[in-house]
Amino acid sequence: MNAPKKKQTVGRLKSRPQFLAVRAGEKRKGSLFLLEVLDRQAPDTDPRVGFTVTKKHGNAVERNRMRRRLKEAVRLNAAFAMQPGHDYVIVARRDVLDAPFARLAAQLAERIKARPKNARSPATDSRKV
Image (cartoon, rainbow, N blue to C red; front, top):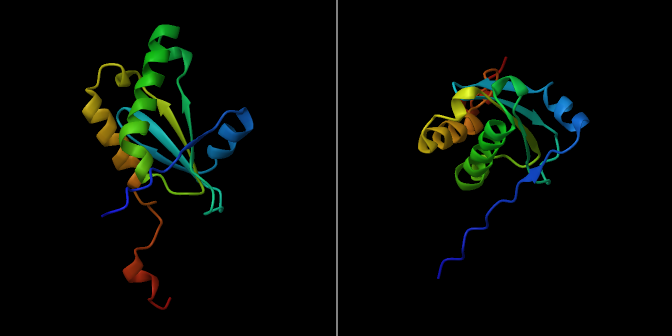
């Protein structure tokens, strides 16, 4: 029998200094949100995620709905793609409210899996510079 695949746990960013630290990392833009990623250089720790929805995107009801949709997309589709030792901040855009959930989840998973623009592929790592 195959052993069940262990689901990766994802921690939460809760304090302002944690969110501000992630701003120094890489930014991955999408049509529905901005994803900020910071490698904490601690590969043995669980990834952490935080959500930001600014007041310019609507009243409290709309902002909470955006946040809930993003949390559910992370829980169902994107947590598996998060790398250990990384922090992720998802900054919502207004379009998160009206986008089909499947599109939201797919874009989130795609942005999380994306490699940094300045990263070298494994095939070119062995080349002499």
